Amino acid sequence: MTNHITFAAVGDISFARKTETMLKDHGPASLFTDIHPKLQSADIRFGNLESVLIPEDFPLKKVSGHPLQSRDFATESLRLLDFNILHMASNHVLDCGWRGLLHTYDCIRGIGAQPLGAGYNQADARTLRIVEAKGTKIGFLGYLQAGDWTLEGGGGRVAYLRLPDVESDIRRYRDQVDVLVISIHGDIEFQPAPSIPRRNLCRRIAEAGADLILCHHPHVPQGVEKWGNCLIHYSLGNFLFDTDGYQISNSPEVTRSHIFFVTIEDGKITDWHRHYLRLDPNEGGRPRSIQDDQYNEVDAYFNRLDAILQDPKRLQEVWQRSCLNRLSLLMRGFERDVQLDPKQFLHKYGVQLFSDMSHEYLDGLYDIARNDYEKHAHADFEHKRPYAAYE
Figure 1 (cartoon, rainbow, N blue to C red):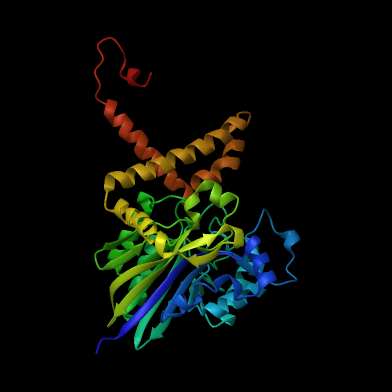
Figure 2 (tube, one colour):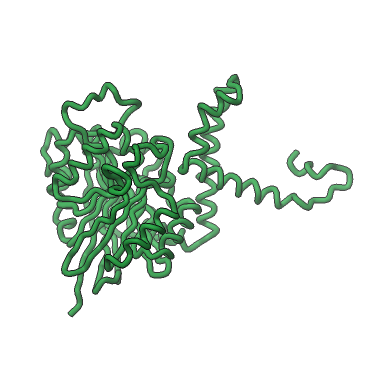
C-alpha cells in the first residue's frame, strides 16, 4: 500500500504595518478565510516568517531604522494555520536585536510549530527539525544568507548560509530522515529568476543529498527545476505581506503568490503543483485564490518562470541586468559622496560591497566586465593602442 503525504509550502509572511492593523480590526482568522481550507488539506505545512514578533512592552524606541515587526498577538493567526515548520532566519530576524529573535522563537514554539534556522545558540539553529506523518520522517534544515542588515550578527543564534556547513549538516542528518528539506533565505529581491551564484549553490546542495530545496526572500515567485533527485524551488514569493510602497514600486509581481504542494509517496517526492493566489494590497496583503477566468494567464506566467531556468542564455541576461541595476543604484550614491576620502567611502559603502548578498553582484559585474574585455583582448590596431576599443 502506497504511503501518500501532501506537503504544502508558502513564502514570506509578515504581520507588520498595514497587515497588523487589519489583524487588529478584524481578528486572527480574517486574513486567511479564503485559503485556510486549501492549506489545511496538506499533511505538513511550511512557511517563512519574515517579520519579528515582539511583546507589548518591547522598547521599540531602542531599535534602529524601520524594523519589520509586529506585536505578538499575530501569533494566533499562525496558530490557526497550523504550521509545522516556520523558517525564521530572514534578513529581518535581527531587526529587534537578539531579544526580538528569541521572543519570535518562543512564540513559534508556543503554537506547536518548530522554528527553523535560528535558536538559542548555534547548535540549536543548525539542529535538524523533524516532522513525522504516516510513518514518514521529513527533516528540515534552514539557513540565512548574510546581508546588509544582519552581517552575520546575532551572537551565534542564526544559521548562516555556508556551503561547507550545509554539506556537513546534510552528512550528519541525512540517514535520520526519509526526505530532507533545505530552506534558504537569500539572493536578490524582485527578480524573476535566481542569481547564477545561488542557482549554482542550490545545485551543489542538491548534489550533497537534499531532496527538496525551498528558497525565499525575493518577494516574487521564481521557477522550479529538478536537479538530479532534488526538487528546487528558487523563490516561493510572498504569502502574506503589506506590498504597498517599497515592494510594489520595485515589482508589480509581488502580489503574485501560490501554495507549493509536493507529493511524497513511500519516502520519495513523486509530484508537485502550485495553487495560485493573489495578494490584495488594499487588505494588508491578504492572500486570495485566483478566479477560474484568471487561471490560464497566471499559469502561463509561472510556466515562463520555470522555462527561464532551462535557458542558460536567458538566465544570464536576467542576472546581468540585475547586477547592472545594482551598480546604477550604487553610482547614484557615489555621485553624492565624491567629497569622501577613500577610508570614509569604504566605511559608508563597504557593507554594500562585501556582505554575502552584495558581493554576488560584484561577481556578476566582474563576469560582465571580463566578457567585454575578452572581446577586445586580442585586438590589433595599426595606428592606435589596444585600449582604443574602449575610447
